[in-house]
Image (tube, rainbow, N blue to C red; front, top):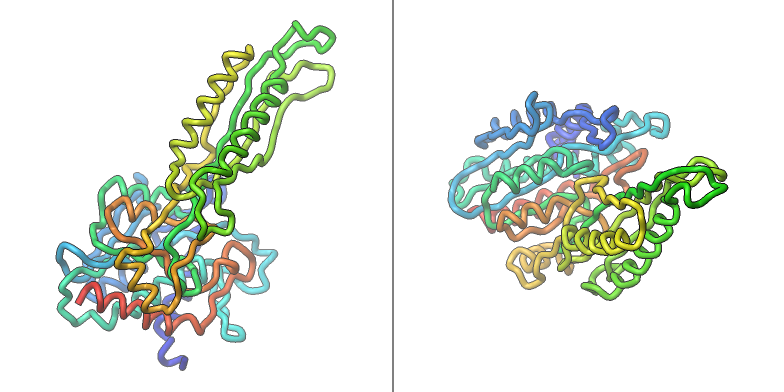
Length: 384
């Protein structure tokens, strides 16, 4: 691919990467994404898109962008998130907030996950800027996918945008993806009462409660192995991982407080709410047998599992255009929120998820033109 042809997408990617937009559940690392949204809005407005910016907080520091070309009841959404994960400068060999080209790779924070998708979607859209579209083309950019998914949640709550099909441009090496597990991270806090260890009757030991909770979670984990198996997934069943425990302060004191943190990754067909309810029931039954308080809380907002039917029109078209059968991935995306809006949804984008969330993240230049060509075929099919 010659540079004259790629100047547009590469220079836009350079501009996008230069605008830091880290989202994190740690407030000291969390940044806004508004500068990225405004930059995309400027480029899309120049192509004739109508622009709507949806602020997510009172000062508008975080926002979603809904950019629409053409009008009509159906249409196609090309969706991506504008935030990145936090990074450690020391571990990078390149400037994370710039694009460095080296041996046909473009290095930079978010180059793959997933600022790299926007310049390619915009380049694909340029071919249709002067066409009369029968159905709208919508480019959607969201906030906070890497932390709370608050951007996608806000869209689902607002019931926007409305279209018939959506492509989430997360890195899949341009192979269509039609399902993934959900994720939830929870804590269970056990409150007892402390006292001198010489007489166990002086307190209620929270570690006894922790032992009971762990036993309960392990038995639940085993039960999950037979629920909603999915043959497309590498790990076909829902998983529960015991991540860490905290509790107590001294061997000669009855432990007053203890806590366990765990995650559950559920398969399509189950929901986080359902799993949470089942664990809650087990805790209520424990509480009747122990003089302790058991309290479960979510550590993150969580993401539901997602599946698009293999025989749906969008999956069939994606398989035909790419020459690949649709697959499953292990990571979570915003796809279930777009699906909630009534759209057929697939995940399909340039680059490899293996490069994401790590130092020296890069996207391969040879993904650019194939991605642009592919998106143009989707747009022509659904919007012309």
